[in-house]
Length: 145
Image 1 (cartoon, rainbow, N blue to C red):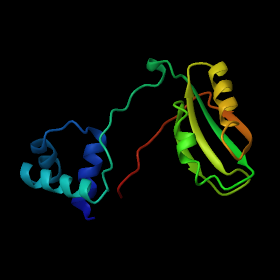
Image 2: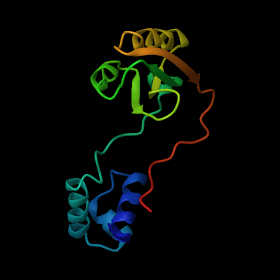
Image 3: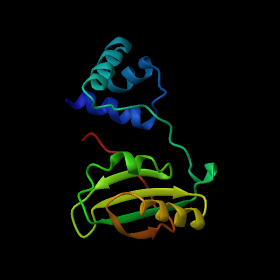
Image 4: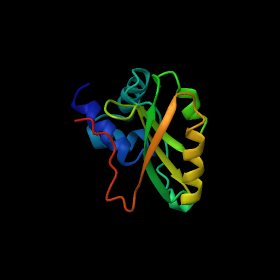
């Protein structure tokens, strides 16, 4: 990946709806060359998907929590079980005192409590520790530099 690819990624993260002509102009390429570079970045898996950044509160998901999940067994094979809980946005196998870290968004703390109950139904889960976010200062995308 060169500096032009990095610049393309930065531009796409700023606004993924740009026309290839605009995108190319921003990084010093023709529209066709920009399109070809973006296609290759997708094929290589550098760009995994194009999405929309939505305000969770506007969709009724204003409660954000990070939950440390303790287990009595290796949880690396439990991907489908965690993915089956729609309120879980992310799940990560981690090193440390817990086995899994999940990012959960719900409308209410009562719904968060329900998610915690459902986590206990996943085979191997032996405990949880939830941290509720009071305010998010910022979230930033992964930078290509």
